[in-house]
Length: 309
Length: 237
Image (cartoon, rainbow over the protein chains, first blue to last red):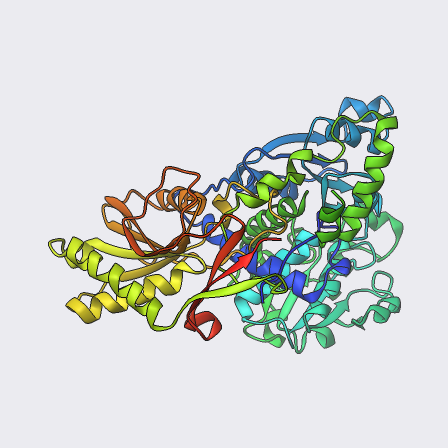
């Protein structure tokens, strides 16, 4: 009857069972209540040390993890790409073995290289939490997306979830698909053909290159940020053209379900993938995603800490 | 050490820990695997769980059933009624410690209502985030709902737990509860007091006192959760 979490790492939703994903979501529900109390801090990770190693820069994810750690009473070390050890040529593994020798317990890592967290998890006794690796995986983002969908819609099974944008380079899209499919949702990837190859059908998602068709039955629309720096690579002719064909505008709201949720992992490019009127409108749950992200990260750190021996 | 490795459900970790332990002298790591988490002493000092154990293969024996348990609840309720007779009804509330204390709190509230007509509010408190043994346990307990639908400030709060042993759960519950406010008083009701305190904690209302050796874990089933009321002991592995 009792589900027991045994993983010392959170690497990808691909590795998790349906029950494990549900266990994180259920645990996060209780952590969400902690942040609504007068005293927003619990002593669960007192005496534990968490290292935030953001080799690839990040603001919102790092702040969310850091606050989650503080609210769990952990001790925190923050490191980023310009720390001197990397400049001096030390390898990632050596840096972390040094941190491990200082008896740190958990490392939260973001890295541009796919698989970096998996490699560290094999090599280290510390718990490893993936905060995004390359275009591979971003499990806490997908968990907070799924948490928000479940909270708002009351279920995941049978939901039509459409992820729109640069799917090809998106760890958020992949992580969403792995988690949502395991929980019984119908997932559609939509965007220009250059950014949404048909290959994705192999993991069980519907691929759609016409936004109107994609959104007709959508219960949830998860928009991805168009990375402006990719524009030079020629995946689409111009930002204006992308926005016209795949952006969400007030007119778009006329042909989608009235209760469809509009989500975005941030940061938003207003006027590109989403207009301000939609981002700030009643169907948007973008800021609730941020609130839920804190609860999900507290739950993940708590579970991982509990599985460390 | 071998038996602990076999017991742990995290096989991948164990394999790696074993490997690391072998290669560590060459690497010169002082503590490749934190040794304090492997101590057998920690396992025996953990307060028993009220949740059903997954593993019933070890020896277990029923101690009390049915009416015997109802009578013990009546003993507690009677003492509480006497104690709170002069306090205004809204100044008293019951909070059950998850999981076994919750049915106890609800039944005490029902009994108080039947005896005096007083409605006593009931809340639930999960103490997982306040435990002092996270990482020392083989597995983390599941977090259950904390629901305190009333203001606890200045109230007389009666904490309810099914089995009282070391007092560590109660210590955690006191920390958790004081994060919600500043009660006027906190009292403790325990259905079973089996002795073996590790903290200076004393129950104000006790249903039954039993004497059980330290090699036993005392657990409870409730009609509400498991379909039957029973107190039983399980031999620790």
